[in-house]
Image 1 (cartoon, rainbow, N blue to C red):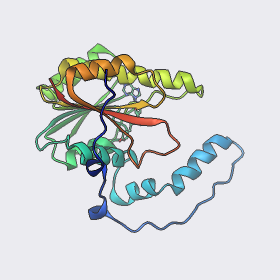
Image 2: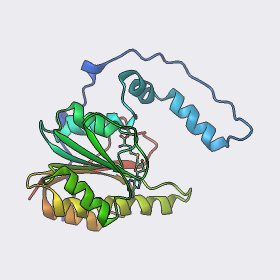
Image 3: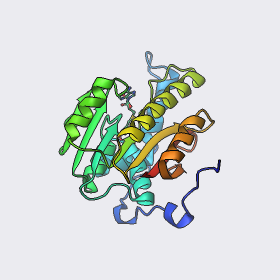
Length: 235
Ligand SMILES: C[S@@+](CC[C@H](N)C(=O)[O-])C[C@H]1O[C@@H](n2cnc3c(N)ncnc32)[C@H](O)[C@@H]1O
């Protein structure tokens, strides 16, 4: 079995030049408040000083995650004009915003969390792994999706391996759902983690799609083990 091919460098190059904005690079320190744990203080400090967070705020994206989808879509051109899209783990809505901005005709988003309305996006609050929720998404979309994208991440419990396994399980559920319901020629994106555990899912994707790529967006934190599987051309 061959390893998934990476896109060539030319395609991987991401050009944000059109959208370049000035970012004031001021470093904000966060004091550890009495009730705030060291860990959450570190998270908040990182958020406040992250250039993608600043840029997302300045450009009106709901999350820094929006830049990951922008990079993925620049590389593989998955969001076509008039695409029908399912967004799994939509909250707070950055990916859905990108899909709409890039011409998707219909986007249905699902999340365990409530999401404030996004123009052009229909939202479902629920657990994607439940069949009833999956049926609801498909019914609302009204036809087979051209693109299924999953940025789902399980709530962390603080135990690295457990967190890893739970998020990979979500990616697997999304992958088998995509294999079953995508339109012929359709594409699938899912968040996974470096460090294994995706063997069977990868085999299934390779069997059912023309190409499968691994992609680590520049906007994905370098210290994070997160990366994305991109499968194109549902057979
Ligand atoms: C990294 S966030 C998604 C960010 C989003 N792509 C954006 O651009 O704003 C991951 C989301 O997955 C959701 N999630 C985790 N498990 C889920 C499940 N079983 N069903 C639906 N959503 C789930 C979480 O609630 C969380 O909001």
